[in-house]
Image (tube, rainbow, N blue to C red; front, side, top):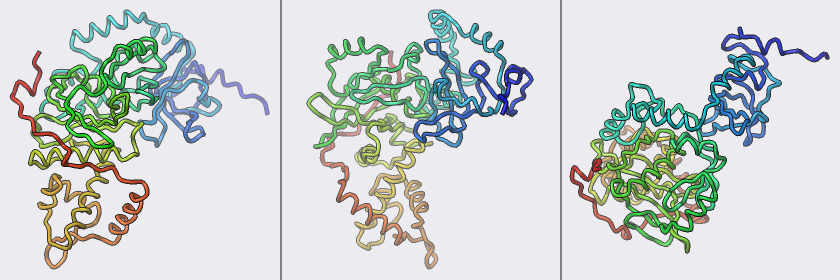
Length: 441
């Protein structure tokens, strides 16, 4: 079969969006869909190019795999692209590519100067309708979730992080300084959360860093974990570094540096080298909506070990000490929603089983668990435990729920279950003045 000459087709400028064509490295554009080798599934998957970047003279493509979660988006080299199959979308001409490269070759100092100029003029690359001041004002009234869709749409900019003895791949964009985006690895001190682009500088820092635990008050300790409470106003730099790190794994987190209105609760594990952060949650010092959690994260290297439920349980124990009903800030991430649903189900089913056949109400369940009545009702409805009987609604423990609980108990006998001892919490609800809750330069 004769070889097909595609050079004429590739160089045609008239290709319409949505049409199929054969592309080359020189003609690939943002928006083109093509097949890319996916490491986990070990096969080529259809993906869309979201961004193109030249690293050390080689183009890299940020792709989103069709029907895959956004956290699996990644930078890929040209070797993982399948250019033997037709692509979907606009492909350019080699001449266009050369023009783009000429315009893209900029001096890093000039780029930094433009970034500084943009910062001084109040434009940070976001749409004009979402100014920094506007975002911070919304942050003060509605918590820590991002208000700008532009924040969510940006592509992941870091390749790998080294946190302690773990190498972790970020999931989402995080606004670390632009010079770090070209590094293969960003080194993060697991104690002070400072970040470095060179291993030599990182090792030099480690010889000087004296911090061995989060810079706050230890309010809980058992044989497995400790919790530290940190005031964002007193430890601004540490909390800002924490926000930068957590943005790598939270798609909807706001990263402006207004950490003053928040308290951070850090869960750690201990060894002879210090207290190593497992995860954290933050909460507003004063939440108008009654939220007991603003952001919550278990670091990827510690996920699927039961630590997420421990973080959630601790947030509700604090709500009990405050004498309030609490709920996490909405919307939750997909993993956050799964974690909360599992915790809510376990808590409510345990309360009903321990009730020994006595009557109870939704308000009583909320009071005993520190959950809001809306979350209790939502959980009961999801589990199909609310029934209408003899003219009134009743709570019914179904056979399916009891069977699931029995399997869970048997599994926990083998693997064990992480629990908190409320008696070990050394904490009283803090009282803040207006000055304590906000910026105080």
